[in-house]
Amino acid sequence: MANYRTSRIIPIVLVVVIIIIAIASLVSLARVVFFSGSSTSSTTQVDVSRDALLNTTVEHSVTMTVRGPIVADEAFHSYKIDIAPNNRHVVTYTGYLDTVVDQISLGNSVASYTEFVHALDKANLAKGKQLTGDNNDTSGVCATGNVYTFTIYNGTTDVKDLWTSTCSGSKGSLDASVTQLTSLFIKQIPGADKLISNINL
Image (cartoon, rainbow, N blue to C red; front, top):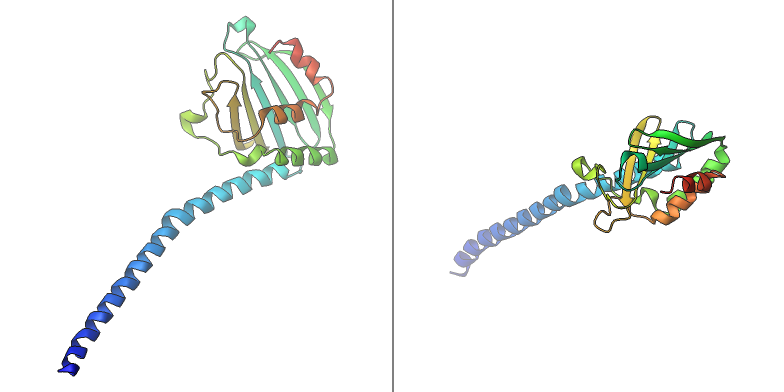
């Protein structure tokens, strides 16, 4: 009788063990597919943009564009600062068609650019996650304030594009101090602060 019970219990125990192992395997597989994959993708995106930011070869550059409040064409102003390993450029504009008001163009050195991009990196420029589609369209955003856009380039390729604004309802994608980043860009070009103050942005 004992042998009979044992012979019946052993298959049941084996089936239960197999079911438990199968469930554990499915849970592990689900974690790998749904969680590890998305985490790896996000990490890769951050690493790619950070690598592009810290790359000091001649085709790489970083840009800051600042747009003022949405007002009449004659009163609308904006400015743009481009920094590359071999040149620095600031230009101020009036109107929505970007009529040039003033500009300064200077050379640059790889050593200077290296220090600059490392400062941007430590200020978390590349940390934010770029928005997509309409969420990354700044048209009409923060109509009463300023919009700041920071772009990391590899040649003409936009590696990462992050923005924020002075309006509390339009935080954007930048995950860093806009005051710190703006100061770093402006200080790269002597006289840039005066040019910007002339357009009353």
